[in-house]
Image (cartoon, rainbow over all chains, first blue to last red; front, side, top):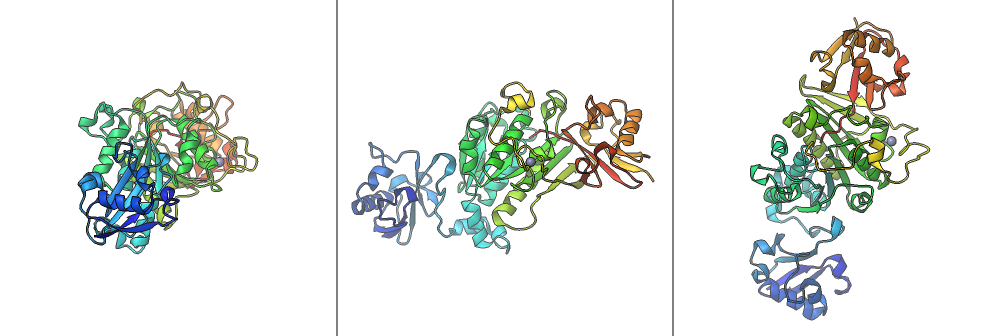
Length: 371
Length: 91
Ligand SMILES: [Zn+2]
């Protein structure tokens, strides 16, 4: 049985920069041994001292992770593709091999791929895309689900909260048995069930000025589903300082807002120069929110992400979309870059991340389920 | 014909859940005064202690942000649509 083995870029120094190595073997163990025989040292990268494949190494046979199959005993056939994929913190390495789509993928994504705007090239762009979602709550749920369904290869999620019973009225990622579980764990399970081809990268901490620049630069597109003003200004500033596109959305009561910020086209500070003093604008926990409005705004955010990945249509740039669910009116306002903006204006004064709790006058972040 | 003012749902508690208010006025300043007369408490939601528009509440005239027009001095004419848009943080 001759099979092709995909070698990830960090291991290619061993294989004289060969991306693919053809070897013989009847199962995964034999094939890995054959690669090691040709390129000594390879075995030390894929096995630990007990000769077990460690959790940070994933091995795929025709795009199926071998844990879903028969592990290293998985039988191989002529022409099979084996891929060795090390998990890298922040998803900096290729999450999936940049090979052709499998027949399983082609079938799964056929309603997208049949459209000229997507096709097989667009679908591979989806697979190569890395999107970060801040918050796995009301907005983060529909965004994460639609991204996973569409085959976005790497979906990062920043979340530190646990699932509360009061979340279930709107947060599609979490179900009744998940109450008390970490939202990240619940999100990973839901997204894996929807689409096992997607790599979910968990960031299990509140986003802060200390960690934002370690996380955000690793992604192509940032989606804001935060539930407080301090995090919204932080995400805005970190996305702008990293040169990233930010797909913004927010909700309260029966109202929703959505827009896209790209450096040079204005930012959240251009839209709202200062946050409200604490207590003046109620949170969803204090005032309430219609569950379905999170689906409307989250779906709009997911749509804008797909348009960015595929480079199609007119992005929701320089426009603020307002949705009023009670009148069911959708209106757009002009959103201009403010030349006096302290972040993206002509003479910026915010050139690094600041103390957002102080800026917003709010108490330190504590777990709340207002999102 | 008057100016149509769109009230966002977070401020409809003040208007008895009315979503659109018709007002006869020539400037945004006048509009705020008449809104306050009809729905006490509205001025405080829109303006700070110094009388300036709050920086987390945007007001648009026919989709244009009044901060890029003449602020509270912006002129209004019959048929204009004014949108009041407060920042919200829910996610
Ligand atoms: Zn700006």
